Each structure stands twice: as structure tokens, then as C-alpha cells.
Length: 462
Image (cartoon, rainbow, N blue to C red; front, top):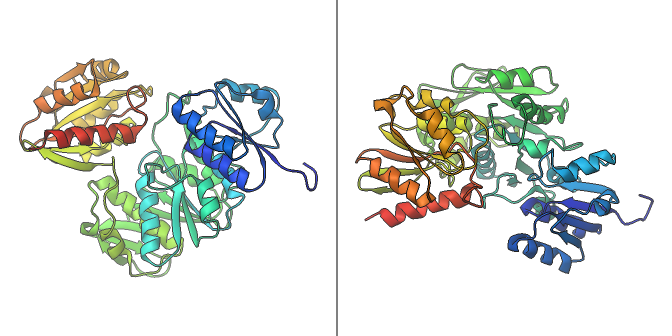
């Protein structure tokens, strides 16, 4: 592109991230071409709004020629790496970037980037909350969704020079970054996920590794000291390494012991910053998330002494071990965000008393037998449903669990599956939605699924 020429930006995919990138590009004076293979009402509405602002919008198919002619190609996270449109661009030698990478070109703020297989949304949101509670002008966004924060491109328009921007980034978004550099980088944990998108776990972890590859010698790394895969991945990268742990006392780092949450900062001895009881979130895994958030907030400039008040003021996030009601003595807990086996197992391990478990949705290719250890002596019954219901039933049936944990598959609607689970629960039990699957067979997203579960709980309450 020559001096004074108008940049041409192509955006592939017209979800929330794609729309945000297109709006940012238009605001920066670019000629914008937007393309999506879908043309349903939500996509059409976004397209019409962008067309009214001057974008060239093509729906129902991807315009390869229009994309290839652009100076910058931005790919939405919903476009898989083996999508035909990317294969066609790859064959032409066309490179692309992710939406947060594009946004970072227009952001002056230092970035705290949070990723991991599970816990990244809670950690990112709590980190931003602790910063704000400490008087830091911090804003939250990225992949976080659910009304908790906008895409990075929206923040580039609304808060380009905040004191701090905290971004949750998925492996899909990390895969296509080039120059985005975290000032603070957080890896909550590494497990198995998105096997419907990746051929191997190694491919998934390779994209997560991009976080560390994007850093510099000035980056502060907040890493899970209890996760062997995280420690192996982070080792050797330049920067300041800070560990958080439930099992040991890293220095520098954060740890929990004796009912307290502590920070160790170099030559100083450990200082207690809060009580574990200050945390309103359920589950041992959320203690780990809190340690990561405290450590990340400290590395991001949060002042001392306000951690306890910040933790106490942070309410549970929707769809993440969210109590949504009690019906006939049965507590209903919505963990719709548990979209993989590890997250569902963590949810089970966080609950006391007998559980009736709802599992199902879009099959992501994981082995549901990974739930069996967490089910043992805890799960009264399992109800499976949706596209993955048959395989989940087969893999969970007969496992060494509490009272043999009878497994029932419901071939009908989500409401029918919830009714079946409710019928199997007794007073004092927990009816847990921890699907271990994505939601797209029946719902728009995990939020839509969780909202449906919450509505059913309210409908059943006296």
C-alpha cells in the first residue's frame, strides 16, 4: 500500500468479533469488505448495519477474490483452520490475522492477556475487577462474551488509552496473532478441548503456546505451578515468571494455605492478602483462579491492600457454577460454560452431596470416561441428551461411581432432559448442568443453554 492510499481490509465471518473489526476498520478510514457464508437473520442484520456505514458486504458465500485483494485480512474466531475459505487463501499465499491482533494496532494501553483451557473467563473478569477496585482504569474484553466485555476491536474504539486492558483470548484467536504483545500473560491451565476443531491435543496446545511466543523480555508471566503442561510450555521463554499454586508456595507467586491467600514477592516474605472465605465463588478450582487473578492484577499495577475487598465484591459469573434456584429441596446449579470434560469434572469435584448430572450437546470428540473419577461416590444419576447423548451414555454407563450411577439418555428436547434429571433427584441433591459439550446442536451458545436451564429452575420453583 503506497503513501496516502486507503487501506483495504477484508473481514471473514460476521459474528460479534467480525462486526467489531469491520466497525473499527471503517472508523479508521479503511475500505472494508465483509464476507460470510451464512445469510440468516442475525448475520443479515449485522451486514445491513455495516453496509449502511459504507462496507461492501457479501453474504451466503465467501468472496475469495475480494478477500485476496485486501491489504489486511481479519479472520473471526469461528472460522476453523481447515475452512475452505482459508484453504483457498492459503493456496494463493494470502496471510491473515485474528481480530484481537487487528485491534491491537489501535490500542495504546498495556495488555494483560488471559488464556487457558478452563477458568480463563473468571480469571480475566476477576483480574479486571481487582484492578478497578484498586483505582486502576482497567477495561475487560476479548473472547469473554456473555455481556461481560466486548471484542477487542470495540475496546480499540471506546477505550484505546485505558490504564490497562484485560483480554481473554481463545486458542483460535491466539493462532493468528503476529505483533500483539502481552505486558502480562496468564495461563490458567492446559487440558483437552476443541477436538472437533483440532486433529490432536498437540495442535491445540501449539496455538496456546502462541501466548508465550508473543511476549518479550519485559512480560510478566502468571502460570499455574500445579500444571505440568503449563510449566513445561512456559519454561525457557524470556520474562518474569510468577507461579500460583494450591499445592506449594512459589516465590515469587501466590498460594493458599491455612484458609488464607498469600502473595510472595521476591525478597519479601509472604503476605496474606485475603481469606479464602472472602471469595464468593464455589469450588477449589476457583481458589486457583482467584490466585491467578490476584497475581495478574498485582503484576498489572493494582495497589496493595485492596485485594480482600475486591474479592468480597466479586459476584459469581453467569453459567459458571451459578446457583439458579432450589426446587423441592434440590439445588439447581448452572455450569453451562463447562463445555469440555475437564471443566465438567472440576464442577463435580466442587460440590458436596449427591449430584444428578446433565451431560450432552454438540460432540467435541472427547472421551466422556474422563468424568468417571469425579463421579465416583458423588453422582446419583446421569442424564445425557443431544447430539453427543448416545456416545456419552455408552461411555459413562457402568462406571465405578456412586450407587452405579444409572445413566439415561433422553432423545427429545433439552426441557425433557431436564425433567428427567429432576425426576431422579431427591431433596438435598444438586441438579447440575455441566454438559462437557458445546451447545450448538440445540442452542445459539452456552449462554442460551444456561438461560434455558435457569428459566426451567424458576418455572419449577414454588
